[in-house]
Length: 362
Image 1: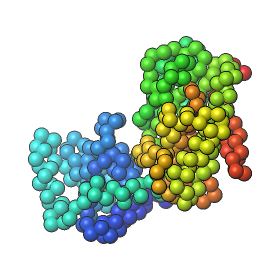
Image 2: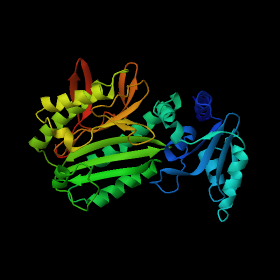
Image 3: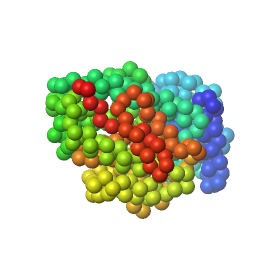
Image 4: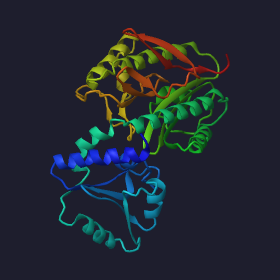
């Protein structure tokens, strides 16, 4: 499936929802849904949750509306000058003209907001289309490969900010947006589960976690490094990898998110850390949002084919995290490269290769 075919498929899916819910159209202006439909970037600032343009999808029109600063950039670069889309701009210094443009598009039509159809949009957005799947696999491999290369060459004495800068540079150089970077060295890695950089310098142990985004899709992964061997930390990672494998092994089509979560909790207990899960959320459904939902007790969401998940179990400084795709034949780990330190985990007859801590001086 090509990008333009993917766009049309998604527009038609949205139109079917509109008909079912008795709407004539919808205005899409969230970053997540804008990227889902267009597979383009709708932001100006990296942390934006609202796109800088609105996409109006009616039963017979598709209109992109934005101020004159953004309209042609969005249309030409983010929508590839799609001939199915009408680009309509207004002067930035006359914002009231937007209302006139929108009124002309809406007329007497019943236009839905994203909030009014969020449940339906969620169900669409979290199933990866053939085009999304191929792009996601490329993103997963590219991100993992560059993060692992950096981690394998990390040196004692490097600063957390310095390492964050190197990661950012490599991500941007590969057209990947660093929407989240978490780095902690030594004692900080043991203390904090969401370690935003604080300037420490590396002695022996580094924890690195990132969320990288390209054209809307987000991949999450963590990789850990020891400069010199530390048996206690290595054992924690072995156990953490088994917890991660337990989550992934239970990602069966039709299973509930609660059952997946409970399988992970049982693994924590079996590894001797029954309450460790309370120190950090365990991840969950992902895609065009870093976490579309977090698995937990009471989460009745059913696992579906072509959904993506990222679990991130931790055990006192160790962390295991990959992004995977649910397929008819089991999961596909999109961030697996075969070029790091791995441990083989056998869970209910299924063999999974989980990342573990890389020891540099071995």
